Length: 354
Ligand code: DAH
Image 1 (spheres, rainbow, N blue to C red):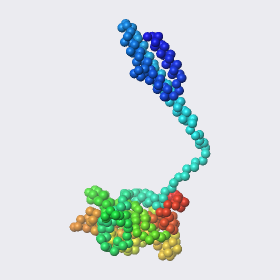
Image 2: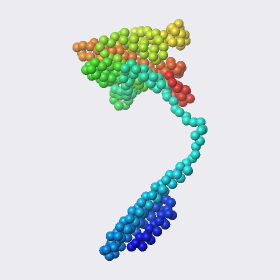
Image 3: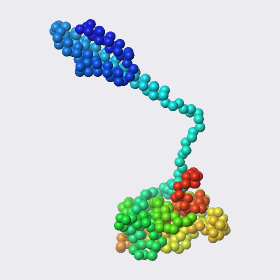
Image 4: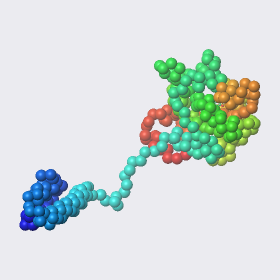
């Protein structure tokens, strides 16, 4: 038995030295260690030898078996390392001193303006909310005090889906009702004022030209608490716009009609180019129309679950609708609104930051 094992050891060592790939190694392993392999055969032979020799022979077989599997493991890791090295050696070499040539994408100008505004509002304690583009008639109009057949609907003709009652939202105000429900409980139970902005893409059935698009962006904002008044609205808008334009701005309010605010205003800023004297940018008026706003209508607060029928003025609030597309046009001096949706990268990739 001893001689048999010695002979097998030599054979194994000999064959192992010639192995250089995993497949051949596996064949060799099977030849020695599988059920029908050499080691199993030795075990069968063990049964036939005299009892007094069995113990020693058994120990020899076991140590041979261990030696074989250990050598097998060593060889396997050696082959793996070798294969890895081959792979490294065969990869294309590169020169790390060459200048980089990565054609990076760029942010869309609307995204840039939107992100900047979100940062400003967040610093003022506002939550930034997302809202769907497909809404129902109730949220887009009725919850905003625009009943069916109200003439104010004419200005916001939009795209209706074949699914009954579904449409593409014509303004970000469509999210007001949902935001009131989302934060109303915190307002009433914890006294946490509702302060939220919700940017979004809006749609209208427009005849497209340099100033009109069927797809554009707005950012709506609302603030609701006890004792919110027009003074808060003016102070807040002025502070916010000074941040946006990075200098002190003079604002004025003109009356404006929107069914969901009462009173409603058009907020103008004094022209930043001529300082109010009149120039071509402000059509010689000295003012630029920027942001419609107003005190939220009691009906809208009622539909939003904020105030009860008995006390319609318990909470008050203001709302505003910033035209993000318009703001981007002003900031970047973009003359044609269609630039934003055309997808022409040579134009869009020029906007790096606000
Ligand atoms: N949703 C209006 C529009 O798109 C804009 C607007 C006006 C929003 C007055 C407001 C507001 O929040 O108070 O025409």
